[in-house]
Amino acid sequence: MARQHDSKLVGTINNLIFYNFRGAYYMRAKPVSVKRTRASVRSGYHFGKASRIGRQIREIVQPINPRITDKRMMCRLTGAWNKFISWREKQDPASPVRKSGLPFIQSFQFNEHSDLESIRAIQVSVNSPEPGLMEFLFAPFVPAEALHAPFNTDHILLKWIITSTSLADVETEKLATGEIRIPYVHELFQPPVISIPVITKPDRMVLMVGAVQYMVKKKNDIRQLNDMKKLPCGVVWAGQE
Image: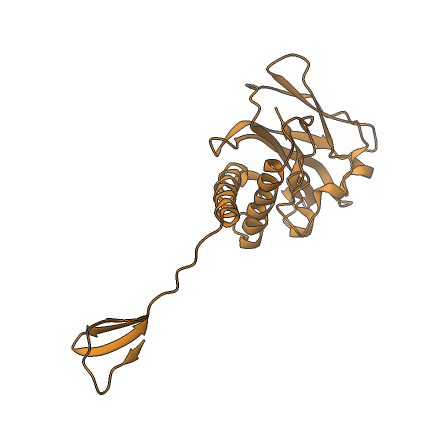
C-alpha cells in the first residue's frame, strides 16, 4: 500500500487499485491469483482430514497422555495421519488389505522423551476368534527385567485405550479403556487377554494406545513417578477391524 501525493485517483488502472481511506488517497497492486492444481487441492483435503482425526484421538487418549499440551506432538500426530491417508489412497484396491502395522501410525510416540517401543514386552498381537470380536494379546514377561522399572518400584500400571477411526466419515470413537496392574516381581507374568466387540467395516482403523506408569516407593508412601523420561506413551497396535 502506498499513499498518493500528487493525485486523488479512485478506481483501477491495469493491475493498480486507487482508493480513498479515511480522507487520504492510497494505491496498491491487485492480489495475484494462484490457480490451485488438482494435487494441491487433494493435499489440502487430506491434511484437513488428518488434522481432525488427530484432534479426536488426542481428546480420547488425554487421560493417559503425559504430553497433552505439547504442540510438537500435535503436529507430529497430524503429520503421521496425513502421510497415512496419502499412502492409503495410492494403494491398489486389488492388493491384499494390510490388517496390522499401519505405516506412520504404528509405534507413534506421544511422548518423545520416553519410547514405549523400546520396552519389548509391551507388544501386542491381535486375533479375531469370531466375527465381531477382537482379542488383544500380550506375551508373558518378567516385570522386574522387562519393563525398565526403577529399583524402588512397587508395581507398574499399563493403561490402554482402544479407538476406532472411520476415514470415510472422519470420526473417531473410543471402543474400550482399562489398565493392567503388574507386580514388580522376578517371576513370569501373563497379562490378561483384552476382548472387545467391534462392528467390522472396511474403512475403520483401530488403534491401541498404551502408557506405562511406574508406581514407586517413597518413604512410607507409593507414588507415580512423574519423570517425563519414565512416562512412555504410544501406539502399540494399529490395524483394520
